Image (tube, rainbow, N blue to C red; front, top):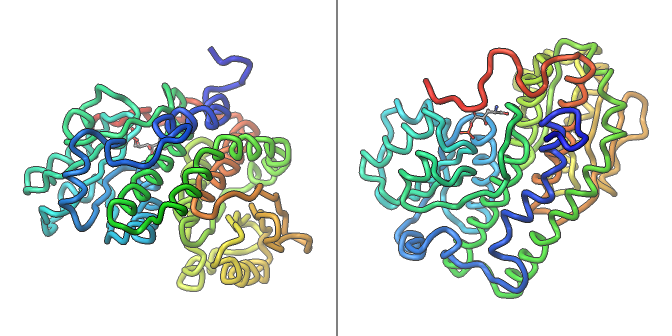
Amino acid sequence: QLAGYRHYMQKEIFEQPEAVADTLEAVAGGARLTPALFGPEAEKTFAAIDRVLILGCGTSFHAGMVGRYWLEEYAGLPTTVEIASEYRYRVSVPDAKTLVVAISQSGETADTLAALRHAQGRGMTQTLAICNVPESAIVRTARLAFLTRAGPEIGVASTKAFTTQLTALALLALTLAKQRGRLPEAVEANRLDALRRLPAALGRVLQLEPQIEQWAQRFAERQHALFLGRGTHWPIALEGALKLKEISYIHAEGYPAGELKHGPLALVDREMPVVAVAPRDDLLEKLKSNLQEVRARGAELFVFAEDGSGVGGEEGVHAIVVPSHDAMLAPILHVVPLQLLAYHVALVKGTDVDKPRNLAKSVTVE
Ligand code: M6R
């Protein structure tokens, strides 16, 4: 069953090109974006909304955070993302013109299901599930569904579910952009082309594994680690930190790099390795100046850069170059090295990678 891999987590990380390709099947070949991707009633539902609320827990919540950037930038829809266990008990203001998107790999997470029902109970009936399990409670509860095609995810640490959720959210943001007249045909063709090339791009990122493995020992000796990113790569930093703490039991925090001076910089010293996600985007120069602040405090920097990012080469700054791809889709590629880093640190530490202590694959109780 492990097909030559040492753990399910490693196998599932390497299955990502195929999982993403399968998730994109409906737009393979010459197919165009259409609301029908999200169910027969989607066109009507999408026409009736003017904002989006995304609900999820853990990794699925992080996917939602990336989705928010995309929905606002491309579809022009005001979007909020909430941790399901908070939303379900919060006194919030219901709005019938909101599309409520529940994201869940299992479709059985108690808090996400309860949050979805809570929204429905308050008159928010335009609902969409992004889910990996077709017959799950969350799919049955939502009006619309988009099924990710990650296949069974056995490892407790979510990997291929995350990249397929991001793929689904990219399709959602672009479909809504198109329906709202914000995606000219030529741009749609380019975006679809970039999506279709994503599995091959993921394959190239996976080839970085031997380089990433060489960093693992450095982390395994430490008690703490800090992950930094900006924009759509802030949630990727959060996800990298979650993966590391979940399977290696090293305390890890993810931060938007611009927040450093507002507190976390006080933690930074020689003992604190700092991981940065540094694609070549509009925020790169800002991120670089944040990284200089970190370096000035003696912390060792481990940067996942992109060709031309111009990071690395100095003492104490280690860099691995992640192959370039379409800027919108960069977070889908940049999370993969962080998954591999967590995996290899856990191997060095000898933890139970697929079944980390105290955790269950599916959290069906509060
Ligand atoms: O099945 P779900 O996507 O609803 O699960 C949500 C979280 O429990 C899950 O993503 C959890 O955070 C993972 N173990 C993280 O790797």
